[in-house]
Length: 585
Ligand SMILES: [Ca+2]
Ligand SMILES: [Ca+2]
Ligand SMILES: [Ca+2]
Image (cartoon, rainbow, N blue to C red; front, side):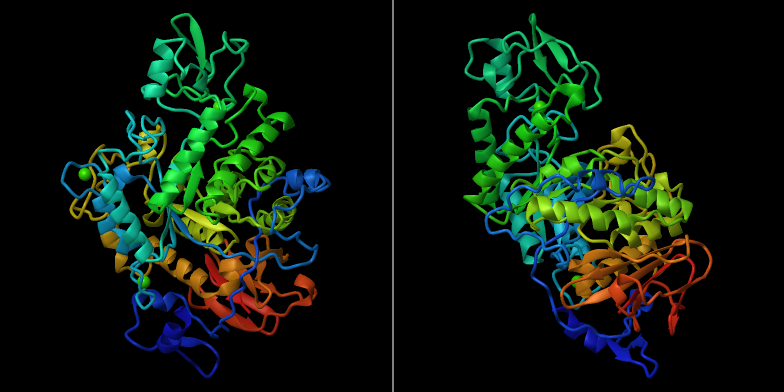
């Protein structure tokens, strides 16, 4: 475990602070651990998916808190009102294989290249701290596809030839697992490629057995009208006088999940990948499987979607009951997301929280995130029987990159990472975010080649020019690796801190109000440990009085860790340097 290595590396000073002793790595200077932790890991359940809204922190959550909770999943536990709903979490890393690392010089990222970079993500050795320390990878689509991004699949049971072979993929899985890294992959159930053999057969012959695998307006009694809820306008596409549904794009015909053969095929596909060793799935467009177009939030439609994901989950359970399922339910409504957590998904991505974190660090103002999360997680806990985990992130492959949204402000990017990596849930880092890559839409430009070195060596991909990220001094892994002030070093510190403090990794959240609008503070707690996390979002030193009446009277008397030297605790007075985070126990 990690604690023995900490014991060797840190020596307690008389005043309770600690200094690195053995060959201090530069990054060590910034995390000052002051008290070693009891090795107490809670193996309990979880809190989860939430929506933090900066302006209406109570909005969706309170609206829905009165909804009677459904039956808890078999084996799940109903959350008692005041129980600590802790849960194990893992830091995930989202990878676009095409842009990550190339092994054979064709400029396209591939699995052999990815394997060569695994040690960058986690070398599997807790004694070293030169790696990022993540514990999970989300692979964007890896199946054969005519598009560069792969979200239009032509074969659900194979690997894109650009990325390698099935053997390469299995080798990658083994190498990841050896390092303690779980791997989940994108699974696109809503639609196929227009070039998928199922669709080409269905399109060529109205009597094809595959005809009913898609949605044809005239044949299924649907009106050729309405607007796509996915934002692409007219969802109906003319083909030889018939109209098929494609809510994202005419090149992506929606599958007809009313057809049991389609549902069975998708369950078998999920089982197939689990049998290869995959640990779970990121489920694309999870709320669009069934939809009545622009009004797709009707309870009836949501119920149909949830019933499908419950069927899918139940099918996967036959192969791997602990498969992790995280859904793209791109919606601000906590009530909507919570529906999917009932015996179906483990997580829904928390899009609202991502927005709130970025606006909070940009404005250098507290945005009531802990208040919102505490209440939202209670709702999710009720809906899921306590068996879920939030899925948090700053941006993903569909959004302008963090550094672009923050206009290149490195301290703000560091604070965004600090918030993300101290909150509950599985945090997902989008590749390149940790070195501050830039990118604004169109989509290709938010998915640019990962920058390994300034001179395009060591596996650099070149499938598209790095318009936003080439030729910028300091914008590469190699340049930031040895620099203790770099964004990359900051990510490494934060992830290490999270991995080493049980309450930070696995705890629930409890709000903690202060009288400083520039400070976001909250308690993270398991049954065994409670820590107070305080973030100074501003560019100047702030002092805050800790109120002994907060957090059910818990007292925090020891400075456990900090991201910048200079934090101090004197009695109830906590002083935080500019743009810094402290963890108290
Ligand atoms: Ca290649
Ligand atoms: Ca390591
Ligand atoms: Ca659909």
